[in-house]
Length: 564
Image (cartoon, rainbow, N blue to C red):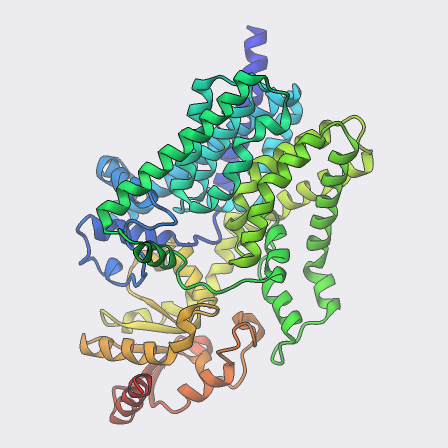
């Protein structure tokens, strides 16, 4: 009995810590969660729902980058709606949202437990396995996305499962286990395509970590074959079903899944990697203002050091300590595994959207395995191990504090006040026009759908400019077209008063030069010509765009210029 309790105690502790962490905190960024919900509702035949009608995403139900996530959500909605409606009520939107979030909650729990069991098998030290699993739970990317409706955490669970199956027996790999690992890897990729970049490193993990005999090497090949057959078959079936038959069709399908994002560069990746592990709030805005020499809200090196540079420096010191400790210890093989999985992903991050927190989730399993090996290494200098512990503990404290429910609720009060006063004046089909996608109101509506203000469904946000996106090249024409359509339906366009300011304030999250195609002066000059009406919401509220002859002429002229 005592032996059984000793075995059950550590995983129970990991599970308890995970549950407490999720209860105590909230996701501060839901990413594409609303888009997934709207797409699932539309596919379910609920496209007349106003929430669905507001969704203007280009990608459809069968998205190349998240192939099976929407179908999974659709299946959950059909099967579990009677149960979820007891929790969130009859509204279809909240039922789909709740089910996607519930799937992530369960997947997050399984991820933490799988990582614990794997670390326990590899190191033989249960306390160390528990400690590293808890650090994993409180890492920024994991703690945030496990409380969203995005596909990342469910995919991460399958990735950890694949790695678990491949290396849990320390090289004694059987064909059946290898095939199951390959199928698990295919499931991860079918939920989020970037997991593909770490699959080669994951599959060859037994080669890198252990000495294999001929039979075990053949088992690894079975894992690779199972992965290729499973993922290839899945994509070929979907491609045939949705009409992707030619290389051009495939290229267009892949292109749509990028959502028109054009952000790239080493600087974004250098900042994005640590941001995946430690919450930096709007520190990214500060770094961009510093690098781009923002004339409106300049940031000095002293500001960076005082506010956030210590997080960046501490992360890279810890990363250096991790690599060095693996080099000087008997765990060099783990370092090669880390490089094999992280290398391709870092290259992608430099080429595409390297500032995104979720971009680095695929390297989490191997990185935390490397952390456990480093802390378990007897030959590694204590100072290196202390530096690793310092960073990950500091990151966990920073993340849990910034994402605490009461902290986010307090921060949302100011944003909620911007719309509460105007909501009684809104007609159906009306828009609240904000400056850009980084306006706090955009994230408030998308990432806090259960807030009382958002549950009323009486306001819809239109982001004027989506910086570093294809949309930024024609924001004027898109705005004019949207307003014309809104007026035709009997709705109104309410413009953020920020659009009429000669310079942006620091708290508006605008970075001059972030997208060279759009300057603040362009926005100010464009809107200064329009006639406006009543104001609601105070100094940071909204003003009604009049349906006047002058405004009609300005909008028509904007549309006409787009066709020249």
